[in-house]
Structure formats: structure tokens, C-alpha cells
Length: 198
Image 1 (cartoon, rainbow, N blue to C red):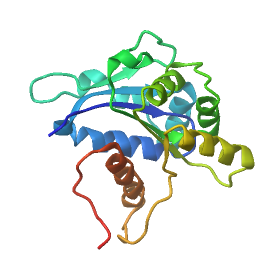
Image 2 (image 1 turned 90 degrees about the vertical axis):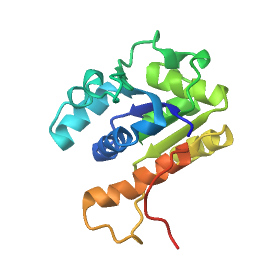
Image 3 (image 1 turned 120 degrees about the vertical axis):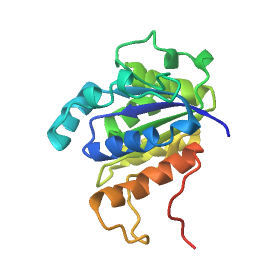
């Protein structure tokens, strides 16, 4: 089984639960992960604390997430760290997921503005023709949002809005959120035991 080298970006859009459940799901998929670099924007940390009531960096401390061999697979990188491996195409990551993705982040990526590690890593994924999956959680959408999404889709990004599905009859908010997370991880190439239509 192929092991993924993954980047996860979490920005300050409302919907921190999507980022939380994505990271928790990835922790359960460690047998499919070689390494996972995590980048929280400063606004993501603030929104996470407000909506969930905890410090996300402390919860997902890289020293606390180890595989059976004692190797850290998850590492948190500061958004101003341009010396982090994902700032260069030579690092060889397979995919990047930004979840949730603010419209500001999406717009900066669409404009080629690499003002922090998160937007630089996204730019690297596009230039290297690797998977970039953006999970916006915004409504309604204005024409600028739609045009930015169109430009990114034409550049190779996958736009996967945080629009849950209901046909699995999810019994809780967490199960509803997981319908989006499993869809995103399926797009990234993970093998999942999850509900599928038909």
C-alpha cells in the first residue's frame, strides 16, 4: 500500500470542526501515512479556540502522535516558516488539503500570492502538478469567489465545498461532518471504510 506524504492547512473559516475531524481521521489512518505536515493560520487557531474551546496546536502536538515504531508522522509548522520542507517542490509531498479554506486564502492562492507557508505550499502543489484540495465553507458566494474557484480548478486544484451528504442518514453533527471528510480523503487517494452510495 502506498504511504502518503500529506500537507494539511487549516485556516480561519468558521467550521473548525472540519479541520478537527480531518486530523482525527488521519490519526486513524497512520498505516497509510508516511508523514503529515500541519499548518494552522493564526486566525485558524483563534476560530478553533472560539468554536471548539481548545488549543489546536496543543491537541495535535507532534510529539504526542507516534506510530508503533516511535516515529512522529505528524508535525506542526508555523505559518511564517519558509524553511519548512513544503515550501519547496523538492520535498515531494503527494497532496495538500486546506480544510476549512477561507475565501481570503483561496483568493491569495488563485492570485499566486505566497505570503505565508500555507499559501506557498499550495503554490508549490500547483506548480508541481500535485493534488491541491480546497474545502471552502462560505455562503453565499460572490462572483469574485466563483471566479477564483474557476481559476484554481483550471490550474488543477480540486474544489470540494464543505457540503455534507445526507443519504447515509448521519445520526450526529460529527457523522454529518465526516461525510465531507471521507469525501476529501477519498479524493486525496486514501483507502477508506466508509459509506458509499449503492
